Every structure is written in C-alpha cells, then in structure tokens.
Amino acid sequence: MLQSYIPVLLVVAFVVANAILMLGLSHFLSSTRPTAVKLAPYESGMPVLGDARERFSVKFYLVAMLFIIFDVETVFMLPWAAAFHQVPEFRGPLLAEMLVFVVILGVGYVYIWKRGALQWD
Image 1 (cartoon, one colour):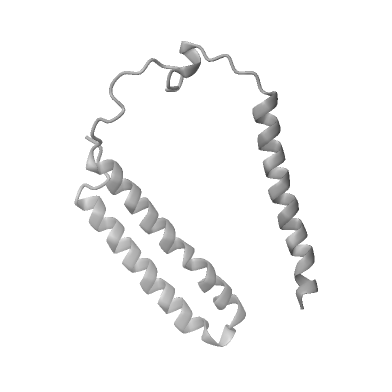
Image 2 (cartoon, rainbow, N blue to C red):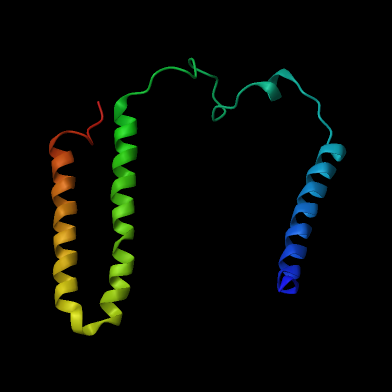
C-alpha cells in the first residue's frame, strides 16, 4: 500500500527541492544596489500624491461586493446547462427554474441600479 504513494512523494520532494534551490540561487547570484529611486514605492510611474492610508469611499467596496455576488451567481448557470443538456425529460422544469433565477437576478440588478449603488459621484 505504501508503494503506491512513493511516486507522489518523489514528485513532492522534487518540487520542494527545486523551489528551495531556485530561491537560494537567485538570492546568492543576484546583485543588489539599493538606491533611493529603487526603494521608493512604485505608483504607475507617477509621483505619490498623498498618503496611502487615506479613507476610500464605501462605493468602492459596494461595487466590489456586487461584482462578486453577480459573478458567483452566474457560475451557478454552468451546472444547470450541463443538467439541461444531459436530462432531456426535465427540460421544461429546468428551463422554468432558470427563468425564475434570471428574473430574481434582474430584479436585484434593477433594485441596486435604482438605489444608486452604481452611480459614481
């Protein structure tokens, strides 16, 4: 039983040894000459305009959460499509289920749109 795990353990050992070797070689063979320009924070090639710890508007977080919600809910359509294709006798109820799902998503989208969650000031 243990013999079936030997190839997997060999691959894991090789990967770990290879990672350690590459990190060690890059550390010892690299040349570092720190200057003020190299140590400065990079901001798209532009000089820094303000403090990095200033407050962001809640709208940024709200839009990010809305994107995640709608993105994750569209992932639920992939298993539905597979079931719709593989089970032809249940296509009617499956289609009705997806129409209800899309209508609920549409209502949610219209709601956040009317509430002004997608408006940038």
